[in-house]
Image (cartoon, rainbow, N blue to C red):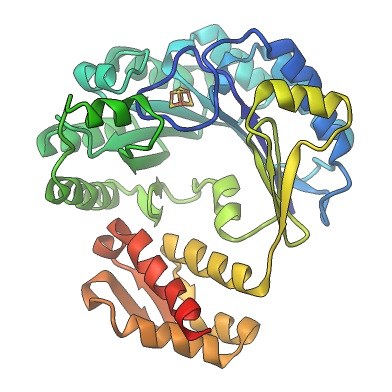
Length: 379
Ligand code: SF4
């Protein structure tokens, strides 16, 4: 079965750390909806398996859509794909958009998983991140989501923010678990080029948090989540039993999916394709039937690298027996020999499977790069 991702590229304003594709105005909303519905129809024959198990509204800010538009999008999906086996529809939303009426409308439409961008429960830090809501708004919003009937609530938090003390971080984690959320995605604050935060940093407006403090916050995240029964299943994702994100898990398993909207990615028939990251060009090209995405056909070595990278992000880890079956024993041996050069505090190796420890997950990019790099130096 496959997945569908829909990118809603509108935000009320730009958060200081964000490098996702979105615009801080909604003047092109109606042409966007028109193009999006066309794209949904145009790509209906791309998937090997037309049965859709998950739909994910991401962005940008999906809660910038009015309920009528969400219905139109879902109807178009139902018209063109087999949704008999649909299990999960996730909707990303920001607290300031989620009043009781909007939340009830989402439930009526059939959204069964809501992912709320809380990021922090400290008003000063929320201002630093240029979020539009307060800590109180976020708390009320989770309570209201529960009140209207959401049984699967996920929240996003950010750690490693300058000014976030370990005490405050621990209190935040305990507070959200007390609220009973089923799922938590927690990310280290990234400072990406072209963001306001990057500019502020280069101007010397603030100092980044010390790495040791960030690492302590990551360890506390893993430990406190575990104690509260919200178990880690991926570097940044934690869930109560039965509440792992089905949609995101399918990315790590390399299940086929189609992504619709500007900047959305797709994976099908051993190809990855990337939609143009511009609303105007996207709308113009979709409507006039011109090409609006680039496609990359994956080579065997691309596939191997993806499997290493995606598997090591998860707690299941990288199974070398499957690598041997798919790519031959020399590849599995090469991974094993580069592993012998990595500090053993970063991973466990048993049953022919490599699993990163918490310490390893914190520096996973570096470890993955070293394992993948082994193939480049051997060829
Ligand atoms: S973080 Fe979310 S709400 Fe903020 S600008 Fe980025 S996409 Fe928009």
